[in-house]
Length: 218
Image (cartoon, rainbow, N blue to C red):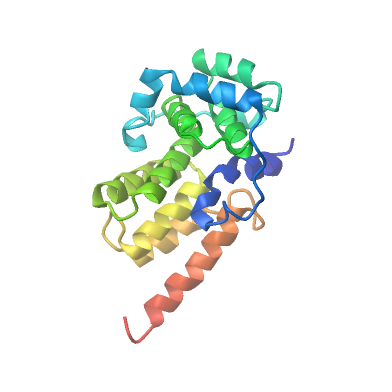
């Protein structure tokens, strides 16, 4: 798979940020997906980890190896779970996406994204922060947590994190409003090209920020 192809797959899990999650007709999850989801949630230590702010778990060194690894396709979820349990960050990340794509209505993917975050995948941190914000967007502590997470993940060159950090900066969500800094951060949103969702959304956000700054009502 090409880098751009990997990018499209890995960005899919943040799709709730664009309010597109409900557009596709959901298919019932497979028995395999339900079984693996249950096994993930049986891990009390993993569930406890998911309650923490992702920014507090993100290691200094980030891994990009997962972009080139084999992803968790149907029929491979059990093996991915076993690899995740052995601290394979990529297995945790791709299994989280696989469960989302299987329309499993549980917090298993949340737990797996957080574990991937702890094991060194910045996009896992971005996904978890997005989920927290989606669940409790009016909670000022959650806003601050998300802002810190996006800041750190953007520094680790995760494009979606940069786009979301810019959103928080432009609106003052969990951080002091700073439109100029938001525009600067958006320069990192197009790492995977202009067709990448992080880039296209980032460019729309940029236009909004510029228009708001020029508005006489501001």
